[in-house]
Image (tube, rainbow, N blue to C red; front, top):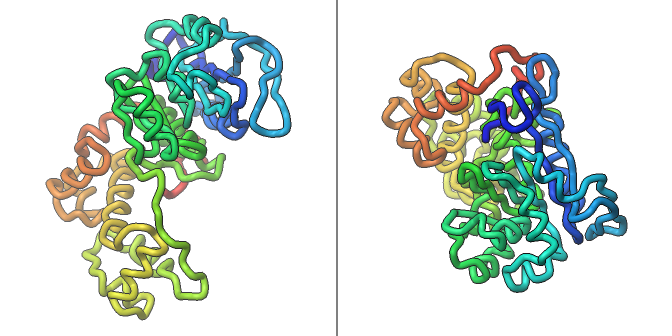
Length: 347
């Protein structure tokens, strides 16, 4: 269900998000939905979501830290949700060990009404999987748990590499900060890029990281005593519309191509060519969302040259062609947004 739909909360009412707090929860991940959805407002400053927390019973809930939290709502709150979020927990018991729900948790989940959007953060996906919500679907979790998750739930199509997966009414994310990416993605999907960018700006996080971006890049930490490639990257970002050669970037740092390429990979985790393509896709995404420029013009302005070339790159990275991307996100953007939303934060 989209946040723009009337939903069960009634016409014009904020989309209701209910977060299920389970014993052993991680406070950081519990707070992500409140932080992200709680900052999403329309052009008049009205909240687009209301977020509440419930437990298997009202009262104290253990965390993995040296404090407990107290929730005011029991599982009956799940019946009021347009979206249910299950954050990570380190005390899932038979859910984690055997892939089955406890009677108490199973009873709680019966309150969720058909059509409710389901979201998990990190090992919260174990709960959705044990309840059968992920059978036959693609899903992800923290990379360190992915192999165990797949063995326990063979009916789930586990992707261990991505930040999050949007499968329509069921969305799953990897651990920790990937929960921020997923919640921002939901705001973006529901209300468009301008609103999501404003939330990201206030939260001081990147406004958009793809679900398909890798969870974990195994690369050495670069030696800070060596020269960096930051100046070359900044130089390139100002010239994405131009043909850029590897020797041009290396020249900005007075390095040989070979040294620059090695250093670039150490710092960024991908080759200069891959990074340039990604930046051009990001710039194209911004122009498609925020302008009415023809697709051919966007392609030229971001350095892809032709609409056909840009289409191939957007399909590879975003999974949709430019026209579909623009129709999806421009249609949902508010007609009038404040200056903070218009400025956004540069990815």
